[in-house]
Amino acid sequence: MRTMLRRALVVVTVLHGLIHLLGAVKGLGWAQVPALQEPIGGVAGVGWFVAAVLMLVTAGLVALRARGWWWVAAPAVLVSQLVIVTSWNDAKAGTLANLLLAAAAGYGYASHGRPSLRARFHREAASALAGAAQEGDAQAGNASGAVVTDADLEQLPGCVAGYLRRAGVVGQPRVTSFRATIRGRIRSDPAHAWMPFTGEQVNTYGSAPTRQFFIDATRSGLPVDVLHVYSRGHASMQVRLCSLAPLVDARGPDLDRAETVTVFNDLCVLAPAALIGPAVAWLAHDERHARAVFTVADNAVTADLVFNDDHELVDFVSDDRSTASTDGRTFVPQRWSTPLGGYRDLGGRHVAVDGQAHWHSPGPDAEFSYLDFHVDRIDYNVATLN
Image (cartoon, rainbow, N blue to C red; front, side, top):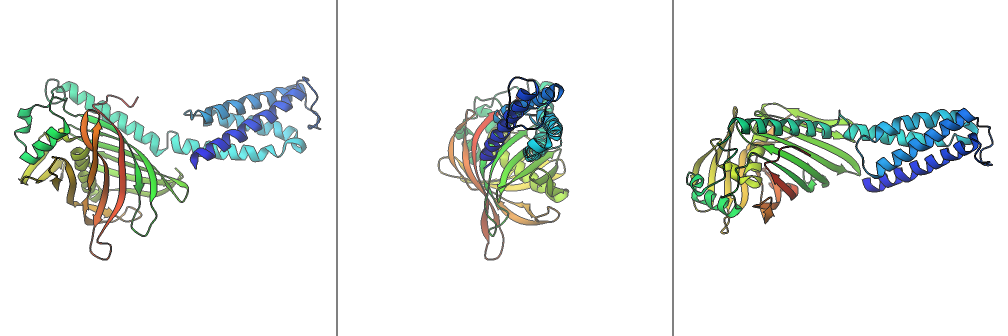
């Protein structure tokens, strides 16, 4: 849908620019243009020419998905409307095209400009990666610069050590950060329709783990932006419809605890090498199960990890997460699990790329999946977002 709208905008803007070029042709005396009845002087002709150039450049930038294209579209609309006013009877229909372009430029700025959740994601992720790099430099020769060895796995339960060996982390650098691209579908409850989404995520590990996750979803044909930020044990979640209308702005102790569970889940699923560290304490285990406590700041959360005969993590279950109300203001504790599968090699590690997220509650819908996801790419120990 968005691709079709972008292409339509390009076509309209190109045609609008070519029509302005006709006004320049007449005003500058290059040729007669019978379709334009009102006189156009030389100065106005220059204005028509400038409007044409700005419109065509805008169309090119939109087609190329260039960042900041709205900064060219804004003066294009202004100059275009000024010259349209000077030949109103001939050119007033062009006002509709300008309104369309102005609305598109406004949405472009709202969805990608500095106030957008997408831009905040990039700022937060860049800051987190810089902080992780500084901590790594300060601890050079410790975890940030070392590789995982068999000796590192001796402190772990046997099933967890087997999982890390199967993941291929031995001989690889310890994980201080990762960047992942994810796609899938999400819904709030069984009564609501699935929303397709694409997502980008950056996590860092060390003394203060961080998580930034931006989701670009679609609901009833309308774009929905979602941003999760977790830093120093505190979390926030913002949701905006069409990048403008706020639907959710959640934060507080309940969300902090819930997102600490999510951070631990990310660690277990996408960065298993980070299980080697003081933040994780193992309580109990057998050949296929392990229970652990993960602590960040004032939040200590517990989860059960389930493995199969191939030493792959197939489920993660925790009672320390809470489901949020539609406005993100209230939270109800519920069991949360993430069945996993579809293992493949990404970023030099053997990890699960397919999974779901389930809520477990009493009633007819005792368990339902609210999230299906597929991991397309993971890059480990990234320094920047570029």
